[in-house]
Length: 291
Length: 223
Image 1 (cartoon, rainbow over the protein chains, first blue to last red):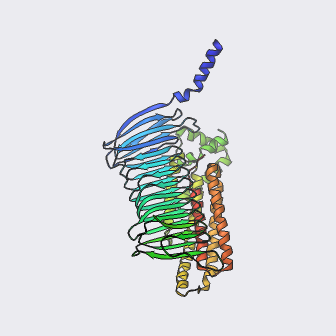
Image 2: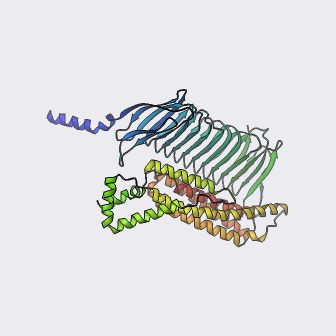
Image 3: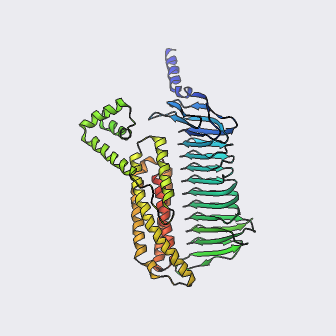
């Protein structure tokens, strides 16, 4: 019986870190045009905008977290998960409500990031956590290494970057720059005036119109490029590939440019011209399609 | 304190970030340990080098600002996430990126030549490319690009232990992919040495590779 009791105590002690999670419930003032910066390591950061001039911080801290350090003032607030050097239990879930017009910056290692309803500038970075954002921030910048990145609606100025994480934008307008090494870049429902999409091996697809007289630059080494545009699109196209294929539904066909290499090139205009669309690949296929 | 314990604290010590008692213990060890003192001196030299890096270089093509911006952002990210232990590596990478940045200026000049030549070639179709394209200017720019690439590869090797196997695989696979492209374009350029499109494409492939390496060396530590 005594052995059994000792065993039970041992089991309970082993499970102690899970019990030792601490809940968070803090409130700090922040002016509507203020800035809040959050740093977490593992777990999640979920942020929603609200109409109060305050930041509400709830959630749970991992057992090994030293403290949730909150510094700054009602203009510039910093919230940081502090960890010891060799932690085991760091999984911390933070749920914040912030003034909707505030600027938000989040920096995580593996923690996921989800932001909704914030109209100030948003700057998100994660190493391996996925990132999702909904709402219409005034400016948007997201960078991950392997985390996938999903944007419900782009900002007037949006910068997205990953190494292997996929980049998906469900609705895009204004200016959008996206780059990835191997992650796919997919943009749907586009009304972009300026864009730059660049990958090494990731596929790139854009579905939508090209408006105004801006520039579209699309480059990939081996990834495929697919442009799905309205038949009425008005733009000047300059397309080339070293050894890939070029399929064009809205104009002439590509031509070989050298007897020594498989290079192909295609230049044409549609409508009254307008935007400049430059697409270049090394070996990836290029398709221009109409919807 | 043992040497390995002290070396784990040197970055913070150089930053003045150690608490007074810990700093005193480190100083006590340094007073009697030539190797650790030398390590601290080297660390300080690299940090000073990073601090002295030029903040503004004006290449003819707008290459430097995004590199500088990324470098600055990466510094902040690394500092924020991981404290000081990667600073010396970043300083080393930063020095190399400056080298790469200045070499990219050379590339940029080469590219501008090529663009002008391409325009001329188009005017005088089918092919009337000035011989200078295949001459020494581009060869010099290519040699500089290769040198910049090799230095960044060395910086990447220094960072491999801090990167996850998945990220390393992505970086290595894509570097190989670009190597293959460079090889094929170079072979095509050998067969058609006055083709400005190929020269541009070759420079573009090097640029892509250097940007990938620059980015990989500035990634935050994953391990």
